[in-house]
Amino acid sequence: MKHWIFVALIITGFSFLICPAAAPGGYTFSPLGEPPPEGGNDFTEISFWELSPRMMLVELLLFISPMLLFPAKFFYSFTVVPFFGYRRIFRRNALDHDSRKRLYECIGQSPGISLGALTRASGVARGAAQYHLWRLESVGMIVEVRRGGQVGYFKTSEGSSVVSRSLYLHLQNGTTRQILSLLLEDHHPSQQDLAVAIGISAPSAFWYMRRLIADGIVEPHREGRTMRYCLTPKARELLREKTRYDGTGYWRSGDGEKGIIV
Amino acid sequence: MDVCITKLCHNNTGGTDRYTKSVSNGETDLPLDLNWGNSANSLSLTVSSPTTVVAIFHDADDGKNDGRIGMIIRNSGGLEPGTWTFLVHGESVHGTEDYTFEWY
Image 1 (cartoon, chains in turn purple, yellow):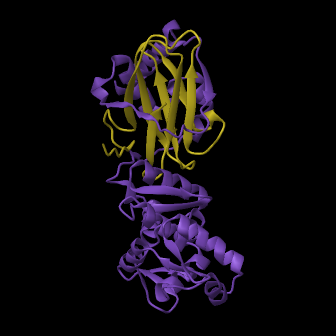
Image 2: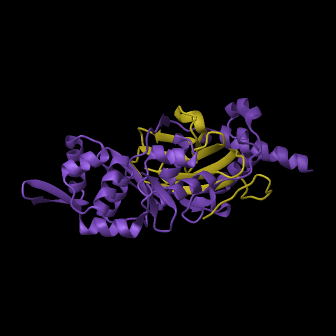
Image 3: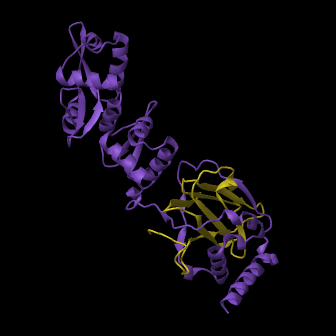
């Protein structure tokens, strides 16, 4: 008896699809390419019982075998294996995925971290990391900040001010970290002092200082014929609040986790 | 809604998520983007106009086997107006698989 019900279901299903109404005319299909940067729109999710009888049957045929819907799909029938499940990404379950959780933790430990550093720290392949970062950003858990040619990732809750995020992005660079260390210890080094202390040329020191000044992290002041530099009050406060320089070559986050090696 | 589907569940909701979208008179394009980012797993997207199944898409149908189905359905004479139905179906999924489904 069950056998006949199954056969009847398949025949009925084919009748829906083989009849003229099931042969769509005039439709063409082309690849979408990259999704628009402004993002997409959600569909309305419905339950099985809200489907039309025709779509209920389509779904039942999909459940039995997707190949029943279009005869051409029979050619692929041997490639279909059972599946276990899938689910949509929401903020509450976004970190259920191991790779995504690892990436999120790395971003928390090193705000402003670049993609390259993130893939090295997390062990997640670059392509997969890009996808998971996109997903985390789409559910509002992280933000991607671009400044000049530099791209860094932040937890949404971390460093929401412009100066704060700029500071974290600068901390990703080893030379800039050394400069900030010196500025934190010595309030008024000159360009020459910085160049000698770090072992870079004076023009290079000037280039770094110009970027830090532009981002509101450092301010210059003239002392006689010498230009000296110091941290802005905001940057000094942020460095003291968000990081702790332990004097041994490491910046550490406020909770004591090792951050960026100088 | 957190959806975890298994084909081992012999009930009517097993294996498929359902979505609808209203299409108005005069619309000619419908760009769709189903993204799960893992080409090892296979999802399909069944697209149905108010009266007929228009297409069943798989990963490689957009030219790339990348865990994403990005397709534009086009009809120069106009898409059939009314409620379109979309079925996201797991054909070969190991463990669980996240996905997003959007239109542009």
